[in-house]
Amino acid sequence: MGNVILTGFMGCGKSSLGIKLSYRLRMALLDTDKIIEKEQGCTITELFEQRGEEAFRQLETQCIKDIGKKKDFYIISVGGGLPIKEENRKLLKDLGLVVYLRIRPETVYERLKEDTTRPLLQGDNPQEKIRKLMEQRKSFYEDGADLIVDVDDADVEQVIYEIAQCYRKRQGRKRKNKKERTGKEKEE
Ligand code: S3P
Image 1 (cartoon, rainbow, N blue to C red):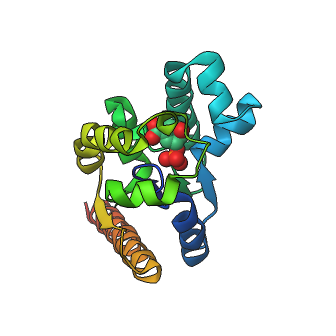
Image 2: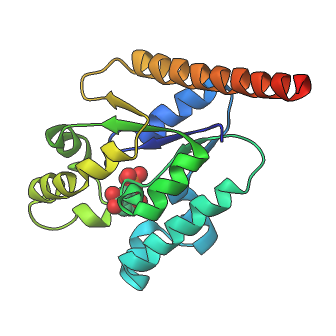
């Protein structure tokens, strides 16, 4: 399908880059965390506290399944832990171009040290939590991605340009393949 999916660790800029990309490609932006919060009528922190992480993970899977049923294409920003599940990685691939916004742990810490909305990074030693989680997840992000972009010191405009170019090329290729297929079918 022709969506653009932004993945990556907490704080990598999925939401802010998503807004810019949404303007550039003229596609609406969806955010799995925001959809879940709206549907459940509570914050992610409350969800983790009241129902636990596993319940949240199930809601994430359901959320991307529901997005797959939509007719239009979107820029989709997904929660940082969503690509950990193999089932989710497959669902994301089917949805479209999967972009992994890669970031260094030190940059995450700098960006999120005052943040209170990420339950997995609260409490003692957030630096160690970030380092460990990132180590566990690295290969899942990389395996699931069609395009990897390093975002730490990157120019935002350059990142947007790179993703938009990659998406347009892919969509162009798809259209060409479709034309060639229908052309052949007509000849036969
Ligand atoms: C999580 C990332 C968060 C949110 C939840 C869990 C994770 O989203 O889904 O707190 O497991 O990495 P962001 O990546 O948008 O911060």
